[in-house]
Image (cartoon, rainbow, N blue to C red; front, side, top):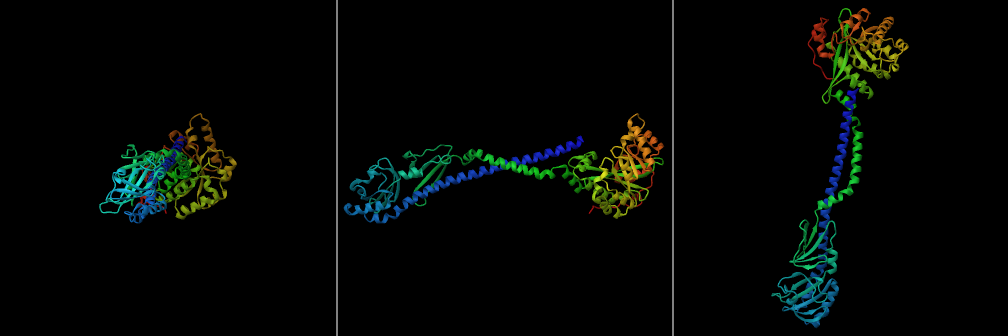
Length: 533
């Protein structure tokens, strides 16, 4: 059974490898999916931040744009007449720090200070201008140094006259431009060539870390943009992976356990035997039995061999005990019955030629053996004599004796295989009344020696003769053994001295060379082997 254990261990290793692979792949895939999902979420969060900030500033400036027309009509009017309207407009807009009127390049009226007479260019070098402009600057009159947005709206063709709207964005900038680590490390409001960054004031240049990713989002309504600096989305997602590890581990262990349950049958020797039956990997062999005196072949014992394409040839000493352990010996026996009937023409078509088929005691339960014999053997009406061989090592006490009597009534004989190796009592032997006793090869080997088995062999022979049971000696390998058995009245001999187990297709040739009666294959063309249905 060491070989059997090796094969079972090989399947167990394969099963463990498959389950560990599934668990590992699940772990990698789970972490990979979570990494990709988190990376995409990080990218989307940065984009949403930039978009929302730009939209918030647009909402702040759009009302100012809508208020341009009433303010432009005030340009040219004396400050004493326009001042009240300017103050009302500034109060209505709320976000505007001040509104000023400019005529011929001179700021002459302010919503806060009233009458003024200051060249606009001294306050803002880029104004006045013939085009509407949005400027980022700092307050130089009221809250000096605070960031402001200046909106210029010309009313004259030369651009020297117009309306100036100054927006206080200090508080808004603190909210809108505040970094949000770890996703966002820096935010900048860009207007023209000037930049406003969180807690850094207005600057003329923008310097960011070289390893940072920059995302710039522009307004659809005003000439400004927002630059968002962030680490690599993949880098941030990678840092979050340790937090995903417990869930990934639980999922991988769960799927690994489910794979272990699912592969319980698929990755086992049970599955391998079923696959071998379905793929017809099992092949029938036979070993002849010769008359001890005439040396004429009187029958064969059908043996099963397995040429597994995945494992190579597997010994019956390996797969038969495993099949019994996993309750697959009955399907194997059915396979032997069906294949024997299908290839019955390899054997002499005479009632004197017997065919022995090994059957487990468990096959007798609930009449299964009789049902299978009716289906495969008796329905085909073969001429040859059927001998059902039951191993004494099986649980023979579980055999239904009524079923044995029914088999005899149908013409089959009963044989006890490997007799002397089990622990059955003589009373049991008397109840079963077998037709044939097959002496185990361990007793045949002991012939001519001083071993205890040699004495037991004589006792078995005497017992069979006393009960009028036909005797077959297994494992005959020497002429000395054959002569001894023949002299002591053993009827049939089987062993390597005469023939080793051979494929059924080779039996007619062996039979011809022995000079025995020809099989049916020597008188008619061999019919093609049709698949079982």
